[in-house]
Amino acid sequence: MEYLTLFISAVVVNNFVLTRFLGLCIFFGVSKNLNASVGMGMAVTSVMTLSSMLAWIVYTYVLAPFGLTFLTTVVFVLLIASFVQLLEMIIKKQAPALYNMWGIYLLLIATNCIVLSVPLLNVESSFGFLKSLVFAIGSGAGFALAIVLMASLREKLRLADVPKALDGLGIAFVLAGMLALAFLGFSGMIAI
Amino acid sequence: MNDSLWKIFKKGIVDENPIFVLALSLCPALAVTSSVMTSLTMGLSVMFVISMNNLVVSLTRKLVNPKVRVPVYITSIATIVTLVQLLLQAFAPDLYKALGIYLALVVVFAIILARAEVFASKNKPIPSFLDGLGMGTGFCLALMLIGAIREVFGNGTLLGISVFGAGYSPALIMILPAGGFILIGYLVAGVKMYLNYKEKKLAERGEA
Image 1 (cartoon, each protein chain N blue to C red):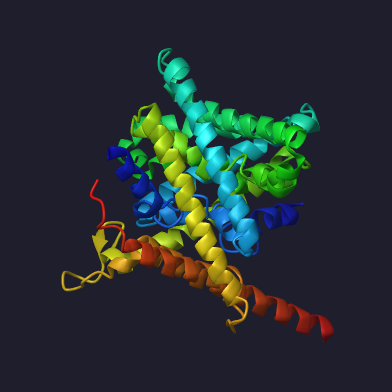
Image 2: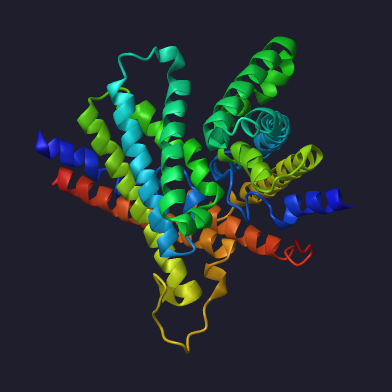
């Protein structure tokens, strides 16, 4: 039950994009196209899950016992960047079809705040291994949900007549504001 | 010479403003701008990191093999950010707490890596430092503008001092995420309008 609550809270109540403002660069950059958004959502979820597991192991067995916690930021960034690079090489070699679909997204998320923030939040809330895992999957699903919703809205928007100055990024922000307002409705659902 | 240095510094403030025009590093623009004080701290931290990193990258630009340049940049940025984290933790623990995880996330701000890649890796130390300072100033000003609007309307205060008196009931939406998004949307539109107007004027002058 505890895990289910954590999962739901990560997906909708504390949605990464709309209430924590993480991953906005890719959120606005990729959401012009629905197919790309679905791919991006999946790529972010899987990379986030794997890298936060890795980061948890490194933090618990290396950084914490040796009193090196002040190096957390540096170590996590390098760990994630090199891990994503490795993942890219493996996928390119082993599953070229998958690489053609997802390859470009992997590079984009190598150094991205949303991927880095999950391990940092795990450390901050001192989650155990299983909790970290649930939190990472939930956060990824929340991101995927937000970006797919946004892309669907923006595809509709293409037919609308937007004032010239607001066109593009401006209207996208206003739209995200509306989405955030809608997600606010979830906030009473779970009390943490 | 001085003229061109001033131009390098100036372009980050409006014409290539990191938030409103380049639309890079948007996360902090929303996350920490519910009050002016946190906006200012974040802005100054980023200004420091971006100009120091530009300086370091520019000084080492001939020593670093282009193939490994990105990991080198990231290490340099992460080191400077850790420095800022430790300093704030020691001297301003309250602000450190208010910024929370977003301070650590300065490491992956696209704007810092972008300036290192686009400018500092090709230019001499002094122009690179000024480029970072200009971009940092633009970033800081943008953050403070957003922070001031959100604090005044959402809380009725500016830097903690009451503006409208006790009778004012704050518009809570400005403090909430939704208000932040919508406000930035309109600010982006405003800057775009200004830049379009300037371009039009320049074109007219060119024709005449």
